[in-house]
Length: 81
Image 1 (cartoon, one colour):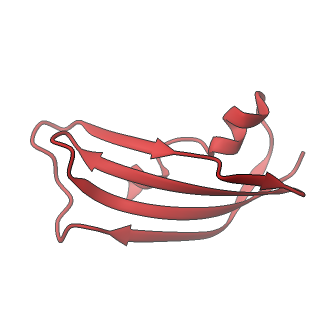
Image 2 (cartoon, one colour):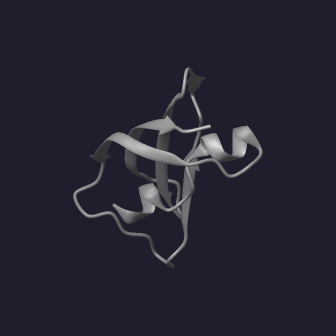
């Protein structure tokens, strides 16, 4: 599960500067019974889907080295800017 939260929130990249943020909700869906990869490499994607009025919503995905989807997640973030 730590992989889904390994990147900084996507809102920080969208803002172009460090801003204080706080997670409000975080839903994690384990797509495989045992997330694993053959050589230790993972692909993690995080996207700022909506940014407005001090809030951001971002979906996240984690894939194994061979392209198998392992984790999907959604995070709601408060942005203090």
